[in-house]
Image (cartoon, rainbow, N blue to C red; front, top):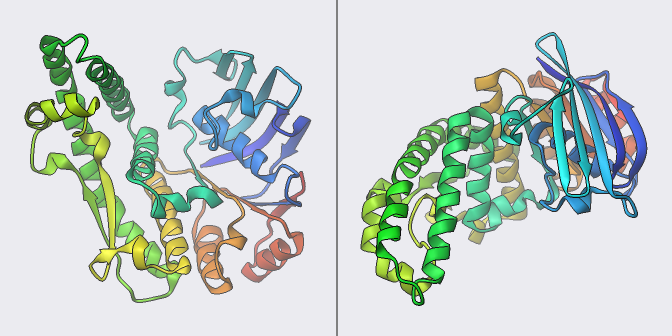
Length: 356
Protein backbone atom coordinates (compact mmCIF):
# COMPACT_ATOMS: atom_id res chain seq x y z
CA UNK A 1 0.00 0.00 0.00
CA UNK A 2 1.20 3.51 -0.84
CA UNK A 3 -0.45 6.66 0.50
CA UNK A 4 0.59 10.31 0.61
CA UNK A 5 -0.28 11.64 4.06
CA UNK A 6 1.09 15.20 4.04
CA UNK A 7 2.91 17.65 1.83
CA UNK A 8 4.65 20.90 2.77
CA UNK A 9 5.45 23.50 0.10
CA UNK A 10 7.79 26.45 0.51
CA UNK A 11 8.25 28.89 -2.39
CA UNK A 12 7.16 26.24 -4.88
CA UNK A 13 5.46 27.96 -7.81
CA UNK A 14 2.51 29.95 -6.38
CA UNK A 15 2.84 28.51 -2.85
CA UNK A 16 4.81 30.69 -0.41
CA UNK A 17 4.40 28.49 2.67
CA UNK A 18 1.57 25.94 2.64
CA UNK A 19 0.83 22.44 3.90
CA UNK A 20 -1.89 19.88 3.12
CA UNK A 21 -3.01 16.76 4.98
CA UNK A 22 -4.58 13.87 3.08
CA UNK A 23 -6.75 11.35 4.89
CA UNK A 24 -8.70 9.71 2.06
CA UNK A 25 -8.00 7.31 -0.80
CA UNK A 26 -9.76 9.72 -3.16
CA UNK A 27 -8.85 13.40 -2.86
CA UNK A 28 -10.59 16.13 -4.83
CA UNK A 29 -8.71 19.40 -5.30
CA UNK A 30 -11.07 22.25 -6.15
CA UNK A 31 -10.52 25.89 -7.01
CA UNK A 32 -10.58 28.44 -9.78
CA UNK A 33 -7.89 28.48 -12.44
CA UNK A 34 -4.66 29.98 -11.17
CA UNK A 35 -5.19 28.95 -7.55
CA UNK A 36 -2.59 26.20 -7.65
CA UNK A 37 -4.46 22.93 -8.23
CA UNK A 38 -2.10 21.75 -10.96
CA UNK A 39 0.93 23.02 -9.03
CA UNK A 40 -0.07 20.87 -6.06
CA UNK A 41 -0.31 17.78 -8.29
CA UNK A 42 3.05 18.68 -9.79
CA UNK A 43 4.63 18.91 -6.33
CA UNK A 44 3.32 15.41 -5.58
CA UNK A 45 4.73 14.15 -8.88
CA UNK A 46 8.05 15.88 -8.16
CA UNK A 47 8.36 14.07 -4.82
CA UNK A 48 7.92 10.73 -6.63
CA UNK A 49 9.93 11.38 -9.79
CA UNK A 50 12.58 13.95 -8.73
CA UNK A 51 11.41 16.52 -11.28
CA UNK A 52 8.42 18.50 -12.46
CA UNK A 53 5.96 16.86 -14.84
CA UNK A 54 5.71 20.04 -16.89
CA UNK A 55 9.19 21.55 -17.18
CA UNK A 56 12.88 20.66 -17.05
CA UNK A 57 13.83 24.20 -15.98
CA UNK A 58 14.04 24.30 -12.20
CA UNK A 59 13.88 28.10 -12.23
CA UNK A 60 10.25 27.84 -13.42
CA UNK A 61 9.36 25.90 -10.25
CA UNK A 62 10.56 28.69 -7.95
CA UNK A 63 8.06 31.28 -6.77
CA UNK A 64 8.61 34.62 -8.50
CA UNK A 65 11.13 36.76 -6.65
CA UNK A 66 12.58 33.84 -4.67
CA UNK A 67 15.81 31.90 -5.19
CA UNK A 68 14.79 28.35 -4.29
CA UNK A 69 12.06 26.03 -3.05
CA UNK A 70 11.41 23.16 -0.68
CA UNK A 71 8.96 20.24 -0.95
CA UNK A 72 8.49 17.80 1.89
CA UNK A 73 6.18 14.85 1.24
CA UNK A 74 5.27 12.29 3.90
CA UNK A 75 4.38 8.87 2.47
CA UNK A 76 3.15 5.71 4.11
CA UNK A 77 4.34 2.62 2.26
CA UNK A 78 3.80 -0.93 3.45
CA UNK A 79 3.21 0.28 6.99
CA UNK A 80 6.34 2.45 7.19
CA UNK A 81 6.65 6.25 7.00
CA UNK A 82 8.99 7.92 4.52
CA UNK A 83 9.64 11.66 4.34
CA UNK A 84 10.89 12.75 0.93
CA UNK A 85 12.52 16.19 1.05
CA UNK A 86 13.48 18.16 -2.04
CA UNK A 87 15.49 21.36 -1.60
CA UNK A 88 16.49 23.55 -4.52
CA UNK A 89 18.91 26.42 -3.91
CA UNK A 90 19.73 28.31 -7.07
CA UNK A 91 21.78 25.84 -9.10
CA UNK A 92 21.93 23.10 -6.45
CA UNK A 93 19.29 20.45 -5.73
CA UNK A 94 19.20 17.88 -2.96
CA UNK A 95 16.71 15.04 -2.49
CA UNK A 96 16.66 12.91 0.64
CA UNK A 97 14.50 10.22 2.23
CA UNK A 98 14.21 10.27 6.01
CA UNK A 99 17.17 12.63 6.12
CA UNK A 100 19.50 10.51 3.96
CA UNK A 101 20.40 12.28 0.68
CA UNK A 102 20.74 10.44 -2.62
CA UNK A 103 24.07 10.38 -4.41
CA UNK A 104 22.13 10.05 -7.69
CA UNK A 105 18.52 11.15 -8.14
CA UNK A 106 17.93 8.10 -10.34
CA UNK A 107 18.10 5.98 -7.16
CA UNK A 108 14.72 7.44 -6.16
CA UNK A 109 12.86 6.52 -9.35
CA UNK A 110 10.39 3.70 -8.76
CA UNK A 111 10.34 3.88 -4.97
CA UNK A 112 7.07 5.83 -5.01
CA UNK A 113 5.41 5.01 -8.35
CA UNK A 114 3.15 7.67 -9.85
CA UNK A 115 1.07 8.29 -12.98
CA UNK A 116 -0.07 11.76 -14.02
CA UNK A 117 -2.80 12.57 -16.55
CA UNK A 118 -2.80 16.22 -17.66
CA UNK A 119 -4.53 18.17 -20.49
CA UNK A 120 -1.46 18.47 -22.71
CA UNK A 121 -0.99 14.70 -22.66
CA UNK A 122 -3.20 14.48 -25.76
CA UNK A 123 0.14 14.84 -27.58
CA UNK A 124 0.65 11.20 -26.68
CA UNK A 125 -2.03 10.40 -29.26
CA UNK A 126 -1.72 13.24 -31.78
CA UNK A 127 1.95 14.19 -31.49
CA UNK A 128 5.24 12.74 -32.69
CA UNK A 129 6.97 9.51 -31.72
CA UNK A 130 9.18 11.13 -29.07
CA UNK A 131 6.16 11.57 -26.78
CA UNK A 132 5.25 7.89 -27.03
CA UNK A 133 8.84 6.76 -26.41
CA UNK A 134 8.89 8.96 -23.31
CA UNK A 135 5.67 7.27 -22.20
CA UNK A 136 7.28 3.81 -22.49
CA UNK A 137 10.46 4.95 -20.77
CA UNK A 138 8.59 6.60 -17.88
CA UNK A 139 6.88 3.33 -17.01
CA UNK A 140 9.90 1.09 -17.48
CA UNK A 141 12.24 3.35 -15.50
CA UNK A 142 9.90 3.02 -12.52
CA UNK A 143 9.87 -0.77 -12.91
CA UNK A 144 13.43 -1.62 -13.88
CA UNK A 145 16.60 0.07 -12.59
CA UNK A 146 18.73 -1.72 -15.18
CA UNK A 147 16.51 -0.36 -17.96
CA UNK A 148 17.03 3.18 -16.69
CA UNK A 149 20.79 2.63 -16.55
CA UNK A 150 20.93 1.25 -20.11
CA UNK A 151 18.71 4.07 -21.40
CA UNK A 152 20.99 6.72 -19.87
CA UNK A 153 23.99 4.91 -21.34
CA UNK A 154 22.42 4.74 -24.81
CA UNK A 155 21.31 8.39 -24.82
CA UNK A 156 24.72 9.62 -23.69
CA UNK A 157 26.46 7.64 -26.44
CA UNK A 158 24.01 8.88 -29.09
CA UNK A 159 24.76 12.46 -28.01
CA UNK A 160 28.49 11.79 -28.40
CA UNK A 161 27.96 10.18 -31.80
CA UNK A 162 25.80 13.08 -33.02
CA UNK A 163 28.41 15.57 -31.84
CA UNK A 164 31.06 13.68 -33.81
CA UNK A 165 28.82 13.58 -36.89
CA UNK A 166 28.23 17.35 -36.73
CA UNK A 167 31.99 17.95 -36.81
CA UNK A 168 32.88 15.05 -39.11
CA UNK A 169 33.63 17.14 -42.21
CA UNK A 170 36.20 19.18 -40.28
CA UNK A 171 37.53 16.31 -38.15
CA UNK A 172 36.67 12.92 -39.70
CA UNK A 173 37.31 10.07 -37.29
CA UNK A 174 36.02 6.67 -38.42
CA UNK A 175 37.86 4.88 -35.62
CA UNK A 176 35.97 6.84 -32.97
CA UNK A 177 32.71 6.20 -34.85
CA UNK A 178 33.50 2.48 -34.72
CA UNK A 179 34.04 2.72 -30.96
CA UNK A 180 30.77 4.57 -30.39
CA UNK A 181 28.83 2.20 -32.63
CA UNK A 182 30.19 -0.71 -30.61
CA UNK A 183 29.22 1.01 -27.34
CA UNK A 184 25.62 1.28 -28.55
CA UNK A 185 25.25 -2.45 -29.18
CA UNK A 186 24.55 -3.69 -25.64
CA UNK A 187 22.21 -0.91 -24.43
CA UNK A 188 20.26 -0.86 -27.72
CA UNK A 189 19.65 -4.60 -27.64
CA UNK A 190 18.68 -4.51 -23.96
CA UNK A 191 16.26 -1.58 -24.42
CA UNK A 192 14.65 -3.11 -27.51
CA UNK A 193 14.11 -6.49 -25.87
CA UNK A 194 12.73 -4.93 -22.70
CA UNK A 195 10.39 -2.62 -24.62
CA UNK A 196 9.16 -5.46 -26.80
CA UNK A 197 8.49 -7.68 -23.79
CA UNK A 198 6.78 -4.82 -21.95
CA UNK A 199 4.55 -3.84 -24.88
CA UNK A 200 3.20 -7.39 -25.13
CA UNK A 201 1.91 -6.87 -21.59
CA UNK A 202 0.77 -3.26 -22.01
CA UNK A 203 -1.07 -3.29 -25.35
CA UNK A 204 -3.94 -5.61 -24.32
CA UNK A 205 -4.51 -3.39 -21.29
CA UNK A 206 -4.72 -0.29 -23.49
CA UNK A 207 -7.32 -1.97 -25.72
CA UNK A 208 -9.36 -3.15 -22.73
CA UNK A 209 -9.43 0.31 -21.12
CA UNK A 210 -10.29 1.94 -24.44
CA UNK A 211 -13.41 -0.20 -24.73
CA UNK A 212 -14.38 0.49 -21.10
CA UNK A 213 -14.05 4.26 -21.45
CA UNK A 214 -15.24 4.81 -25.03
CA UNK A 215 -18.16 2.39 -24.73
CA UNK A 216 -17.84 1.57 -28.43
CA UNK A 217 -16.97 -1.48 -30.50
CA UNK A 218 -14.35 0.17 -32.74
CA UNK A 219 -11.06 -1.69 -32.52
CA UNK A 220 -7.84 0.36 -32.70
CA UNK A 221 -4.86 -1.74 -33.79
CA UNK A 222 -1.87 -0.87 -31.60
CA UNK A 223 1.66 -2.05 -32.39
CA UNK A 224 5.17 -1.45 -31.13
CA UNK A 225 7.35 -0.39 -34.07
CA UNK A 226 11.13 -0.64 -34.04
CA UNK A 227 13.86 -0.85 -36.67
CA UNK A 228 15.50 -3.54 -34.54
CA UNK A 229 12.79 -6.05 -35.39
CA UNK A 230 14.54 -6.60 -38.73
CA UNK A 231 18.16 -5.52 -38.20
CA UNK A 232 20.72 -5.38 -35.40
CA UNK A 233 21.81 -1.93 -34.26
CA UNK A 234 25.33 -2.68 -35.52
CA UNK A 235 24.09 -3.47 -39.02
CA UNK A 236 21.86 -0.40 -39.11
CA UNK A 237 24.64 1.96 -38.06
CA UNK A 238 27.15 0.45 -40.49
CA UNK A 239 24.74 0.44 -43.44
CA UNK A 240 23.65 4.05 -42.87
CA UNK A 241 26.92 5.67 -41.80
CA UNK A 242 27.32 7.76 -44.94
CA UNK A 243 23.72 8.94 -44.64
CA UNK A 244 24.34 9.87 -40.98
CA UNK A 245 27.47 11.83 -41.94
CA UNK A 246 25.45 13.74 -44.54
CA UNK A 247 22.54 14.40 -42.12
CA UNK A 248 24.94 15.06 -39.19
CA UNK A 249 22.84 12.90 -36.85
CA UNK A 250 22.13 9.24 -36.06
CA UNK A 251 19.10 8.34 -38.16
CA UNK A 252 18.61 4.73 -37.05
CA UNK A 253 18.29 3.08 -33.65
CA UNK A 254 15.93 2.56 -30.74
CA UNK A 255 15.58 6.36 -30.41
CA UNK A 256 13.28 6.05 -33.46
CA UNK A 257 10.90 3.52 -31.87
CA UNK A 258 7.18 4.30 -31.83
CA UNK A 259 3.75 2.99 -30.87
CA UNK A 260 1.61 2.85 -33.99
CA UNK A 261 -2.17 3.14 -33.65
CA UNK A 262 -4.40 2.33 -36.62
CA UNK A 263 -8.19 2.42 -37.04
CA UNK A 264 -9.72 0.74 -40.09
CA UNK A 265 -6.20 0.55 -41.61
CA UNK A 266 -5.80 4.34 -41.34
CA UNK A 267 -3.61 6.17 -38.77
CA UNK A 268 -5.82 6.69 -35.71
CA UNK A 269 -4.99 10.38 -35.28
CA UNK A 270 -6.05 11.09 -38.89
CA UNK A 271 -9.66 9.93 -38.55
CA UNK A 272 -10.45 9.58 -34.83
CA UNK A 273 -12.95 11.95 -33.21
CA UNK A 274 -11.99 14.08 -30.22
CA UNK A 275 -13.87 11.66 -27.99
CA UNK A 276 -11.99 8.69 -29.42
CA UNK A 277 -8.64 10.44 -29.00
CA UNK A 278 -9.33 11.36 -25.39
CA UNK A 279 -10.60 7.86 -24.66
CA UNK A 280 -7.39 6.38 -26.07
CA UNK A 281 -5.27 8.83 -24.06
CA UNK A 282 -6.91 7.74 -20.81
CA UNK A 283 -6.59 4.11 -21.91
CA UNK A 284 -2.83 4.55 -22.35
CA UNK A 285 -2.47 6.19 -18.96
CA UNK A 286 -4.65 3.75 -17.03
CA UNK A 287 -2.82 0.85 -18.67
CA UNK A 288 0.42 2.45 -17.45
CA UNK A 289 -1.05 2.71 -13.97
CA UNK A 290 -2.40 -0.85 -13.95
CA UNK A 291 0.97 -2.19 -15.10
CA UNK A 292 2.80 -0.41 -12.27
CA UNK A 293 0.32 -1.80 -9.75
CA UNK A 294 0.63 -5.31 -11.22
CA UNK A 295 4.41 -5.29 -10.79
CA UNK A 296 4.97 -3.14 -7.70
CA UNK A 297 1.64 -3.48 -5.90
CA UNK A 298 0.79 0.22 -5.76
CA UNK A 299 1.01 3.62 -7.43
CA UNK A 300 -0.42 7.10 -6.98
CA UNK A 301 -2.75 8.39 -9.71
CA UNK A 302 -2.96 12.13 -10.43
CA UNK A 303 -5.78 13.41 -12.67
CA UNK A 304 -5.60 17.06 -13.69
CA UNK A 305 -8.70 18.78 -15.11
CA UNK A 306 -10.19 15.58 -16.53
CA UNK A 307 -13.83 16.73 -16.26
CA UNK A 308 -13.24 19.20 -19.08
CA UNK A 309 -11.83 16.54 -21.39
CA UNK A 310 -14.54 13.85 -21.51
CA UNK A 311 -18.29 13.82 -21.99
CA UNK A 312 -20.45 12.68 -19.07
CA UNK A 313 -20.78 9.08 -20.24
CA UNK A 314 -17.06 8.55 -20.80
CA UNK A 315 -16.30 10.40 -17.55
CA UNK A 316 -18.54 8.06 -15.56
CA UNK A 317 -16.90 5.04 -17.20
CA UNK A 318 -13.46 6.40 -16.28
CA UNK A 319 -14.30 7.24 -12.66
CA UNK A 320 -16.01 3.90 -12.06
CA UNK A 321 -12.65 2.23 -12.56
CA UNK A 322 -10.46 4.95 -11.07
CA UNK A 323 -12.42 5.47 -7.86
CA UNK A 324 -14.34 2.21 -7.33
CA UNK A 325 -12.48 -0.72 -8.86
CA UNK A 326 -9.04 0.73 -8.16
CA UNK A 327 -7.64 0.49 -4.62
CA UNK A 328 -4.86 3.06 -4.94
CA UNK A 329 -4.83 6.68 -3.83
CA UNK A 330 -6.21 9.11 -6.42
CA UNK A 331 -5.98 12.91 -6.65
CA UNK A 332 -8.45 14.70 -8.96
CA UNK A 333 -8.57 18.44 -9.73
CA UNK A 334 -11.63 20.36 -10.89
CA UNK A 335 -12.68 23.99 -11.03
CA UNK A 336 -16.17 23.18 -9.68
CA UNK A 337 -16.44 21.91 -6.10
CA UNK A 338 -20.14 21.12 -6.61
CA UNK A 339 -19.30 18.83 -9.53
CA UNK A 340 -16.75 16.96 -7.44
CA UNK A 341 -19.22 16.58 -4.57
CA UNK A 342 -21.98 15.37 -6.91
CA UNK A 343 -19.64 12.90 -8.60
CA UNK A 344 -18.35 11.46 -5.34
CA UNK A 345 -21.88 11.17 -3.93
CA UNK A 346 -23.06 9.39 -7.08
CA UNK A 347 -20.19 6.95 -6.75
CA UNK A 348 -20.93 6.46 -3.04
CA UNK A 349 -17.48 7.72 -2.00
CA UNK A 350 -16.55 9.39 1.26
CA UNK A 351 -13.85 11.37 -0.52
CA UNK A 352 -11.89 14.35 0.76
CA UNK A 353 -12.13 17.72 -0.99
CA UNK A 354 -9.56 20.45 -0.39
CA UNK A 355 -9.16 23.96 -1.77
CA UNK A 356 -5.63 25.36 -2.25
